[in-house]
Image 1 (cartoon, helix red, strand yellow):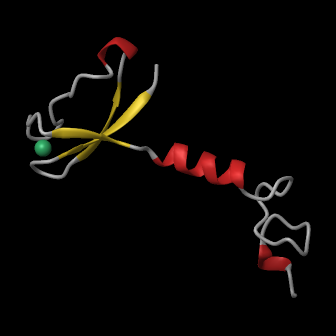
Image 2 (cartoon, rainbow, N blue to C red):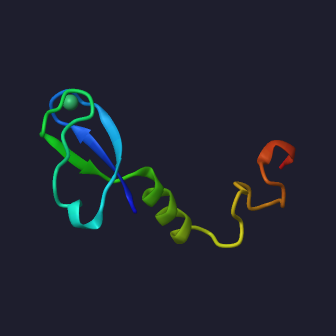
Length: 77
Ligand SMILES: [Zn+2]
């Protein structure tokens, strides 16, 4: 079951909700104020995944192309 992120248009609260596919088109009431002026927003998960797919391959976890370290803390370049 997918988890969607919603933002309330009345109070600005962002909340996660597990949504059935059959209920995905319905707008849930705000978890904070109960307003139905909620809108689904794209979760960060999809954004990160898309950038990974479109980025350089084979270097997951490494921000430095010049070394094999998992971070650039040990890279003196
Ligand atoms: Zn609200």
